[in-house]
Image (cartoon, rainbow, N blue to C red; front, side, top):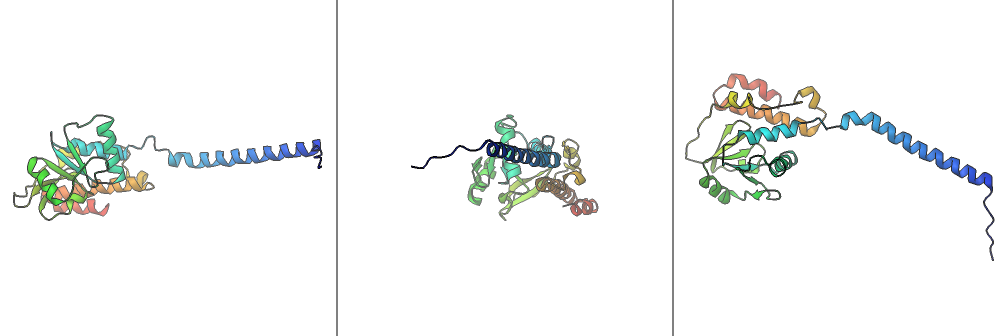
Length: 212
């Protein structure tokens, strides 16, 4: 038989002190990480993606169809705005993959969508912008889609939309550290330039494209 001898008091006290040191070190390091990184990672007042998708929905005509890009920022924020906040229940939304909204499908299905609705739009990053069978006309933050041959029309909407768009915290210096914010910012510049080109205001587009 092996009889375990009791642990000496000095050993138990030493173990408790060691544990306290370890616990303190863990709390200290965690606190330091929190203090040093909280301001950088606190996105509670970051409305860049929220405002961007809300501005897109604001652009669409009543009872229109919209092909949203299967991009994390765009598809999930749009889903939140539509499903949770109940915005634009009149708009039929499709996404490239059909994971969140109805699938836009291939060009044959897309052609049916375009034929069935006078107002069909595609976002800048949507895969539905890649088909040669359609004309894509800049329309605020989106493109209006028409079947090829129906006539490509220029819409003088640049000032109309950009005066109404809400763009909080969209200062370039403040958003550079966040990748998704930089993407949204470049989308604004690119689509603004696209609208200017569509309206034959090419002399004003160079500055916009330099920021993309």
